[in-house]
Length: 269
Length: 320
Image (tube, rainbow over all chains, first blue to last red; front, side, top):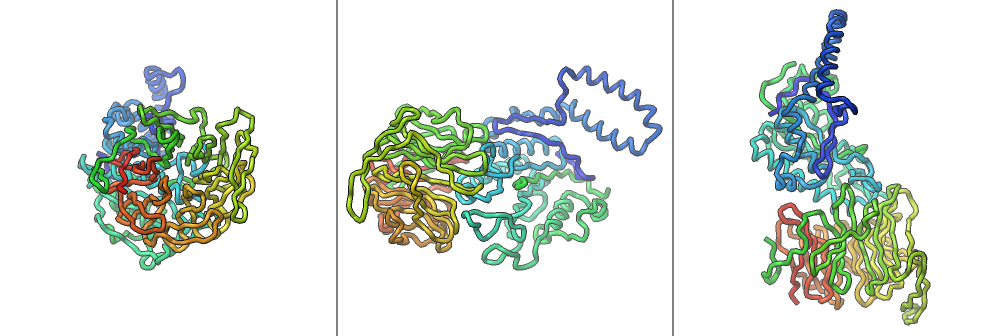
């Protein structure tokens, strides 16, 4: 299980392929560096650091904690195991879908199990949906309707359902908040080539687990989906509510200096 | 930091922008594929002996796959082609082939192959061309291959269909006003716009006699099915549902049209008479069934169906 969020998370980029291959670019050892050699280097560095530590103790501590965390990640059997998706049954891997997003969400569940407090799964490393190398990003300026019906809808439906079912069966859903969202929506009025452009004035997100009340629709748009009709939910309210549910109180949130003045999404709680 | 000690985690999924099957008569459908990969837009080839469809199979790629119905073997049509490939179409005589391919810029282009021609060569095609209501025989020189690339960095072509006489290819194109149905001649020239409505006009299907096009349009709000003459005139609305009616397919005898509809809550296959009457539901399953295509015998159709989260092709009986 993960612990409560205590401070701003230090993100670690993880890449996950549809065939369940996981890589952590930041933690890959340089060519020729074995774990034993790494340990030797660490000992030498500790000796050199002893003097330095006396000089700039406060700033050094932050850096030292970060480095300690990195070594812990490199050497922790639990962490290494969490990144190895071969530990999952074929049935479970298939349930999430053999897509980059599907296997990434499965990895997310495994990271939650070993105590990672915050996991962000990004769909697509490419913005445009139609590039030759694209893995179907959501920037559907063209061909919106066919692509959403053919690819995005079915793939998201499968993966998100599998994730929520899996978390629930493992009794993790009550303590894991799942938020599915984009940073903006698409134009209610289709563009000149029959598709949809950027629209930030009204869009949706899906919330589950983690103490939110299920089975509710919060908010209401006008009939065209262009503008909120009543009581708009803002991005700052989304951030505030996530942190509130994660156990971070008002003073702690204020210290972040990014959510000032925002209130909770009452209807979710 | 003031935090509770309750174990807790957050999973945030983001959409990056900068980031028991049954038929009407109760008979069980026949499952044709078993890999569960996402599959779309199947078409019969070789007189019903094989099916070609799009599948999301290789790492981040959609490819065209040929399924031999006799032994169940599958084969990539273009194993060395890296761009996505969608919407395969074959002429009735099997001589010409067309599909949609992603391009280096965010485009979808139309790719044509003259299967009867040796590489780099051209062939003579004898076709019936209608002019002023009369029929005449015209010999056409057909190139071995061509690519139709519409103007505009984000232009897309989808769903090509050959006219029965192979004289033209009908497809949809991102065009001013939305998505429109257009046609080009067998060499990718002489672009003609067949629809001029607001909204999107998609999934054209040409009647076996070559005189009508059934298609889906959002011109009146929801996606409904319409019928028009092959030249775009005489548009008539066939369905009137708030839920989407899409993916039209003509029966081989031209009497019926199969389509996908969400009118009963999720995507299911329906069949209606060509005038829009006598709509009958063919599939009954809480998961999706879509992209119907008729077997040449007119008594069965294939759909791409989701079962237990897996996507495969199934063969369904169609009652008369």
